[in-house]
Image 1 (cartoon, rainbow, N blue to C red):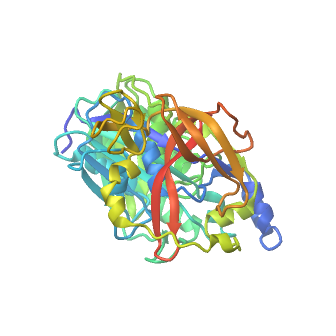
Image 2 (image 1 turned 180 degrees about the vertical axis):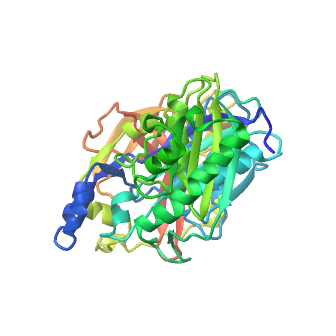
Image 3 (image 1 turned 135 degrees about the horizontal axis):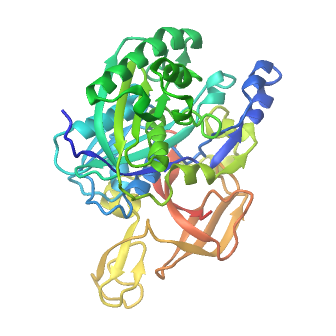
Length: 479
């Protein structure tokens, strides 16, 4: 049973900046699959080589927790069907990047694209003390030439829930479970296999979702005509309109499906639709969001008077785009082609897990030091201050939220890099420290001395022999 005051206290979102036009994908396959041109409208989010479900999750979570006026969450759940590790708790990596306490209860949830909404429902109905942070993130991969390659996207949503929720009050949940297999991906396989859309829509969505929404509305004492925001994720295109019509919800109350700008984000999609509603709803509005997948999950909220908004959120994240038209670059980033990178790529980047553990806060959370004697900040944190040489004077200082600017930089086409050229430069932090860093998301706008920079958690290197990704922080131009 849900508690009457529990609900959403803050949220954050992150969509990768790269967006590839569907026309470019269709053009690449036109020689064999001319029918794909019928889907060549709009664009979809595309991850660079150094982005995955974990880096997306960290970006969204930072957007949710930064300056939200709440205590650090006591629990963190990561929902994803594309998490990079099958046996290593992915949520712990997210928590460590957020520099959360080691007492934070971390858990992973997977197995269905409805897992994002399921995780949110579990957090809202948990009897645990303290706030809980639910993060849903997916970098969806599709077989080249498939309809899913046109439809899939990438993104992350983070929602913090707790008591005395002023942003949105939780009203309730309806959960349905059916062994209705609309698509699947066997363990160890790279791509999903989909069944026929019309059957999914007519036999699955049309029979499961309306009945579940009706039951939830009856439990909450609301009518379909009260719904101001209705979203449906995980179902074939057009299913939201079909279900809304069956329920008697007006077409103008349907939350945008994000298909034209982002694509299907898997577990993150329903939470992202919920965030769209939170960004646009008025106090008192009834929000109903459903996620289809081996049944469905349906959640209802009432918009509150809360005014807290994240620094980025969904709308700004969608707007901060870097257009991409190279299908070959997309195929390389997705691991669909193995380019000959030359002898410089023949390096072994085995991770030193012992050193990684000993310096975890510096590597994962980007925590340097501030001298207690002269107040100088520095990275890495060393036994002696780099300015006054005072011994054992360093207190933790978090660089992750600090801004800086380009002091010097070079664009290197010779060194092996999966998205050449490799931009490396001295970052002059506003707090006074200088650090040699990798700079990403440069785009056609380029960078120059003085370009403002923020920090993002990214994959630093991939161990291609042992399949382990090392993470660190990179500088990103502020757009």
